Image (cartoon, rainbow, N blue to C red; front, side):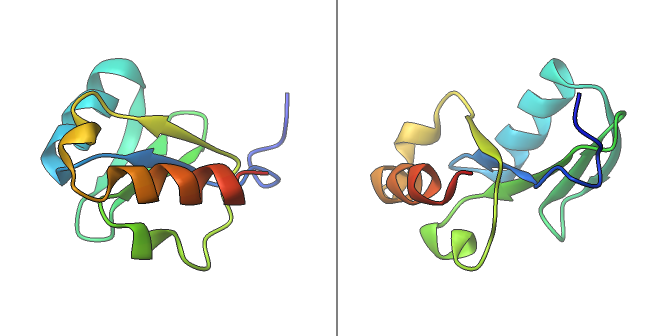
Length: 89
């Protein structure tokens, strides 16, 4: 298991901020939710960045990404997905 310090954030691709927060509450144990900064923190310290626009991925290093059901409704979903695939390490 990796140290949390070594972990890069995980991008959460969605079409609406509220959908991502609800989805993550149901599927992950969260200890912190900061909607204004589009940042979630899991109980284990893993950081999640909510992404609704492709530009939000610029300059971001991610370890992986999660697709929230309904994310395909975003007109920018294909670009967000391609970008997340390209920067995932």
